[in-house]
Image (cartoon, rainbow, N blue to C red; front, side):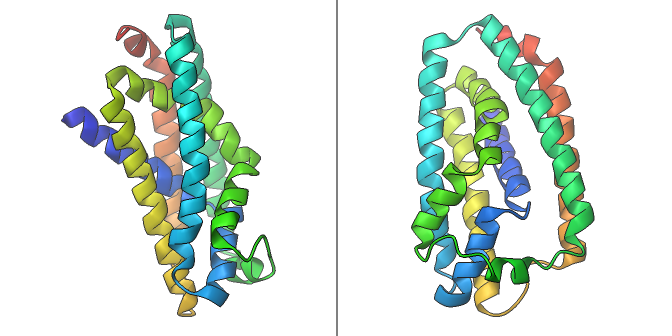
Length: 215
């Protein structure tokens, strides 16, 4: 039970950390919400989750075919390094977000009028997103796979809860003409998330022997 709670919390924390970084999906959500209102968020999430579940299923299929001690060591180390790098990226974003006009930038971007298609495109065509899942994301899914399928479900549930909650808040706030979060709070949360990502990345690198022992 404790492992499932940890997987759920990990999925949520990583999900909210990634979502808070200003990027294509955030801009698409804000831009479309200005025209279509709060319902934009859930539909963006639907498109995003379709891409995500496809990637996760491919990862699980690969894990079940090629899992081994060397694979675990490689994926854990590479995944940990990528997490640390993403943490540094979040730190860099935190420094610039205080002066960034997110709503103004989003209103000038037109990815698609369909929120579902926008969710698909901003996920599938985002190289950073794909790189994350092929490295750090794969390592985390592997860790949960060793615990059991239910742990993967818990991690994905936490991750999707973060994504859906965030996108609904963004679309609801934007449709009412308000910022979804103050710049000062946005900066603080990003620093926290960046710190968490780097600490977890370091733990992942040095804990791969424990993961291998689970085989």
